[in-house]
Length: 337
Image 1: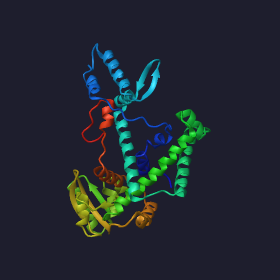
Image 2: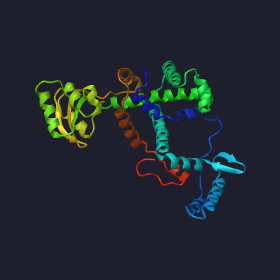
Image 3: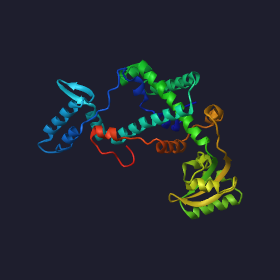
Image 4: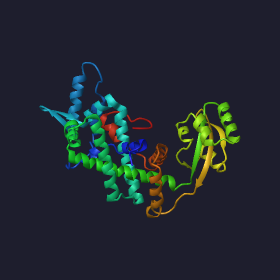
């Protein structure tokens, strides 16, 4: 089984695993605990003008005072982790914020897998790890023929090949866990298999509905007219969970095999065909795992499934990003790190 775009997304949720699995065995350094006096000293620093150099020197002195982790030394001068992160934020704030979100998501995946009692067998992990390594090697040979994977890891990335492979293996393990916790979340709720057709205008939606009511298959009309990417697959979309969303309400107010809508949703007109309704699975992971594994073998987890799960998990276990922003001296964003 090759890695799909959504599997890549799930992999991205654990993108920092290579680093975490390959990190030094030294004990982690405790989070910086800046005193209120130290915070005040930094906050009163001038951001511009002739005082910048002295302000930076004062900030560095504060960092040393609070025993902040050092990432480099230049002579007798130290570069602190907050300086690295601050510089990263200035050059790629979106990338760094996404990385932080990904790290948080790895914790959500791990916590939910532990709660459900989900584990990955050595056989499954070994097979998927082999596929991941083979894909890395295949991509490398397309771009750099004749270069071995270990040569690329050591020379191109500057990393230890053994530790890198351990990181990839852990990455694969958590991807497999993520797939299972997400699909378990969907299948342990009432959900429906549906097709949709999305049109720009009410007139276009009415025209599509007229063709369907005249006997044309919904999938064919959706394939021709729908402006949604799902049209390429005849309008089939990921499972619709029973909740209070407009899409779910339409699905569950429409009889299977009949067409619901059109309704206006996000400035687009939508027709929906429920094909089958499923009752939530119940029981422990041992009791539902057979159905979950079978579903994964038939269809990988989709992005909408993943986001439904993430929203729910984030509400159950909110993440506190304040320590990160305290570290770099920036205010946290209103809705995301």
